[in-house]
Image 1 (tube, helix red, strand yellow):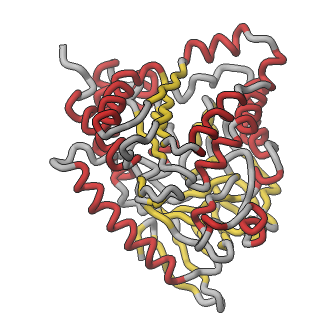
Image 2: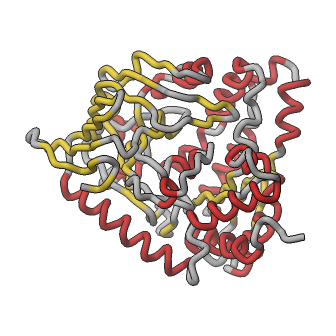
Length: 411
């Protein structure tokens, strides 16, 4: 019987994760998190990491069945608790030079039938406990990346009309194509792709826009940009001097909004899959940078719980531009996974900003980032607002308008 996940391309994905995503250095330790179902990829990543000279590879595995056991049999008080000791340890590892690799996968709808109140409480506890580790990732203290494994439950959600093998094969091939490992030389393909993305980010950086204006069906949104903001894309140099590709795949160029200068209305153009809940038809209104109205046709209760995580959860930490010509958009698939769906459309992110999206951000403390307009929060959640019907203008410092995108294409 033929394996639905091509072992040759899977090995290439592992190699890309180590060589391109992490750019792992000899002697460097690696913290690797993944679902149990992704063990075939985890093992190949470990092999390539050790071949690259890794010091110690430490895998941390999660399991859907164990997660469900918590919701169905766990004590109520436990949903306000998270393993802070684990994330404190991860933060110490990053401070000591360890790299970080996350394998995305698992069932995106795992918690869709569980008590939304418990889901929200558990998510909030996790977000708060994860703060030490997340803070080091958002300021790129170390080199890190995310890749994906075609979990069967995920595959069946993406292709419910196919049998198990066909569905998993379809998702696997989509992941391989988006991750550029179906090219003859994936490492060279990534070098060329990074050059294109860097060209876009350099142009945007040179414009030094004061704001971006999004218009389209249900959307009239002005996103002010932080003072001294910097556009990033593709390969990024971490504070340890190692250039990494944080997301495999990636099609975005992104920067930091000003947390107080976002005004207007915006509608999501794709559903948001968040911690096992599908949130559909998100529509919000901003005043003074803060979401003051929010609704969704499905998952609204979870959305509102997310917005109440902390003060920064109703403000933006990222704005990203992605063309409709993105290979992920052109695949026609809804992935129910932010790593992929965010690279199919321009998007915004609620919550924590990236310190690296400021010129000189690596030397700024939290106070300086806040003074320049950067947001702070225990969450960072991307959701899609771009499509072939959305136009984007850059607003210059003197108020002139420059076309940036028209109908989802670079202008």
